[in-house]
Length: 459
Image (cartoon, rainbow, N blue to C red; front, side, top):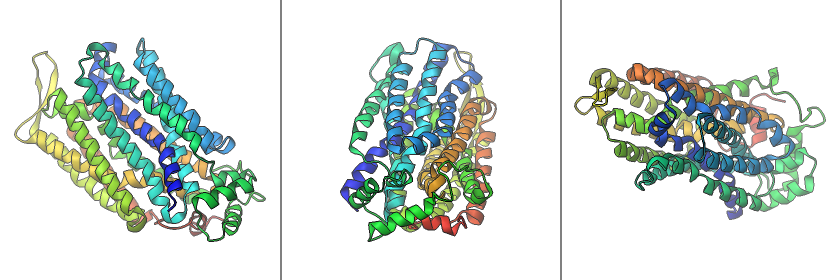
């Protein structure tokens, strides 16, 4: 593998790092937001979900600009959105200004979740594609870990009432770095061929590697896949020819969030606090979750092109079921609701219940990182034909973020009533995911993009 390819993949995947940072950074601010804006559990859920609502629109509308101006050009606009959101959230003067800037950051996250893997998929040879696209997921979990670590360090700096503002504002620095590094990356060769810019595409394939020994042969294969004489570049996604990849993408994206992953990432400090850990300990335990996420993502990244996407999903599904089931059982059997000194009703665990919850969530995060977390963006980015890949990527991301917003919005209200019911529901959904993987999910490891199209029976 050429080092130059790895370099541009790492830069493109910085969109994923900011995606992870933006997703997790709010977890350390929930108590401050409740106090500053006087939020009820319902309004807290909506405020936490405001960025996720933005991701829905970002993912929904990323496909068309990715096809018109190109994948690389869209990444520049995503970096700008991240920067404005970070500064604006830090300087928010009321609840609605805060929600607006978080929504803007969500637009960037949604668009990045579609565009970064799409760009990397189209520039990487098949033999490296899984590992290259998985770097996006590695950067997502690195961003999550950095957000948890940043929140913990900020909490130790005694910024007082402005502490939560510093937690958001720090994101402006990696956003600016992402913008300037993008100038070092080339355009997608498949996008260039779709625009009949063959010479530019040939140069990029020569520089960064191709699936065929003869680059001209690969260009002809890609052109046959695009088939621009019979299929317009504006061809609609929703038609009978694409029913298989549509079903596969909607399923994997929905199951990703039905595990409860985003709710746990958003509310990790609050969950640990309810499990009997103090506020600082809750933030530090969140760093532990982030570290576990990173370690198992690295393990999955190392083997995804050999072990396969499907096997990783099977292992991850089993881990989900065991960890979520154990956490639910602990909430049912070892927790109760009591009144604290401030007159608030809080959850309290008996015996080793709090530590069992902590261990269960560590196993949950490891299972996610090794399975769904490593596979989802790779699978979504490779399952559609070239001519509708951007639209298909947008559909998968749209589904993912609709489910994420729904889960994160409802979690505070449901968890307040019964933490056990919440985790039991997530466990049941992962039983369904395991069935779907075993019955329907195809293996795509080391298969050129154009051959995947043929195997799905798409002309």
